[in-house]
Image 1 (cartoon, each protein chain N blue to C red):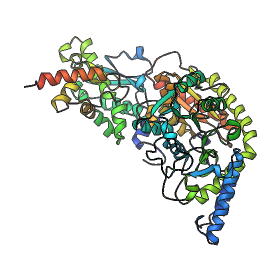
Image 2 (image 1 turned 60 degrees about the horizontal axis):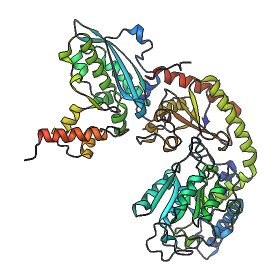
Image 3 (image 1 turned 30 degrees about the vertical axis):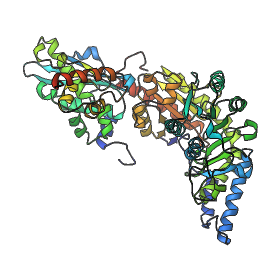
Image 4 (image 1 turned 90 degrees about the vertical axis):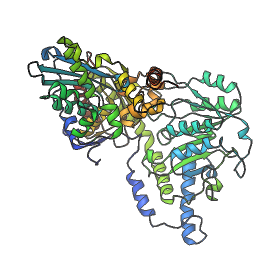
Amino acid sequence: MNEDWLYSDKVKEHFMHPRNVLSNEEGFQAGGRGVVGNIKCGDEMVVLIKVDKARGVITDCKWKTYGCASAIASTSVLSELAIGKTLDDAYKLSSRDIAVALGGLPEHKIHCSVLGDKALRAAIDDYYTRQGMSDKVKKEREHIICKCLGITDAEIENAVLEGARTYIQLQERTKIGTVCGECKEKSIKLMEEYKAKHFPPK
Amino acid sequence: MRKRTVYLDHNATTPLHPEVKKTLVAAMKVFGNPSSLHKFGREARALVEKARGDIASFIGAQHEEIIFAGSGSEANNSVVNILYCPAWKGCVGQGGLVKKRRIITTKIEHPCVLESVACVAASGIGVTYLDVDSYGKINTEQLKEEIGKGDVALVSVMMANNEIGTIQDIKSICEITHRNGALFHTDAVQAVGKLPVDVMELGVDYLSFSAHKIYGPKGIGCLYIRKGVPFCPFIRGGHQERGRRAGTENTLGIIGFAKAIQMRGVEMQAEAKHLFGLKKRLKEGIQRNIPDVFFNGHPEDSLAGTLNVSFAAAEGEAILLYLDMEGIAVSTGSACASGSLDPSHVLLAIGTPQEKAHGSIRISMGRDTTKDDIDYVIERFTGVIRKVRGISSVQGERQT
């Protein structure tokens, strides 16, 4: 951190001059659209993609974000990362990849403001659905439990498989419920179900 | 308009008054420990006691009713700490306070009060947090009802809120408190030096304030303790401040504090009038240029220099940092900026929906703020909000 700016220079650059901002959704004619977050929690983003069907490559990506500087910068850099990638590669983009592309972000900012990768995966799933390729949709089989951070039941199951046994441990692994906390009861119930499923009492 | 630098975060802290700076520079040669008996010590002692007297008379207190602390936060912690004292030995004033096991405060206090209260609550003290209305005022009927349940040792209500500027009717709140046999504290950190404050007129038992909010140095706070009321030192191990706060006096800070107070006496009244005018201009300018705005706080009973406003579909930290690029310094109640996950507890307490609390900006003007500054701010604000809303995923009829 320096006295001129709160985050890295790359964040500043994307914040001051965001790339690929969506200006006219109808005119864009997206092939897929994904939304994640919730303005009650302080961050929400919409990601739209165009896809070259023959090559399976993202040819354009536009977005809009309600959120802080790092939320804006991270969605902006995500749009650059997504364009030109195959759908499979784009699907693998993580919040870490975004943070790295931005020259680093404070840890607490990664969890609360970097949601663009999730919005992109939602857009890709939406594209598959619209194309009648539902077998490719991954998220469809999952359900978002924590609306603020876009954390799914599959992620809760993974955390249980990796050793989370209490709500605090689940939060340490996934950051679930660390924003508005509305999903606490639901996620504890799911965690208990997965514990019973994978580690039944002897 | 050409780019300029406009500092509008005076509720966070203020620049040193030029007269205070002069006084501090001159006082830097005084290094003696005020407790020393020799010439060096006596010289420092005389300056400290002169400062204490000047500060006391500014708020209508007596000389020995004033103690210095490291900050307004320490002063507030010290008062709440009275309830914590497990031994009640070696304390100044009368004992017996600990027999009562309840404290009443409000939902909009500064975190230094809320967290100290949460700490005493953990030791078994019952705490009641009074609600506030949509302007941030407490309901005295609720206070009467709660205090009427008995066992209340202390009521603590802030005089002027740091985030929304709302001013409470401390005199009547204090009367209700005393009628029910409890002690009364007010956190007046945002009030002293901005509003006329007279402890005799108000009738308060404890009152905290701080130098750096009123163009004095940082690291020096003050606590008024009415003669005869119980007190238990928060910092122990010295006879300083008549045994009420250990530690060698911050001589320089105290001298600077007194000078800042003196200058407040000269400037405060005309400045408040000036700031009310600027606030009106700013509010009208924002209303004229920007749709979907909501002003937070009381329309009249409010600090002259404080304006808190929420913007729909725009997040506070993004607004703050775009304004920063334009040379304008403000603060926000958004969760993102605070490092916590929740937006401002004050805005939530007055019933602001979460999404509007995330989009809130506090503008706090001060003695140097000019009409040109405000016109520049209105102009740049308009552009910044348009930009943030242009990027925002939240849709609505708010593109200007």
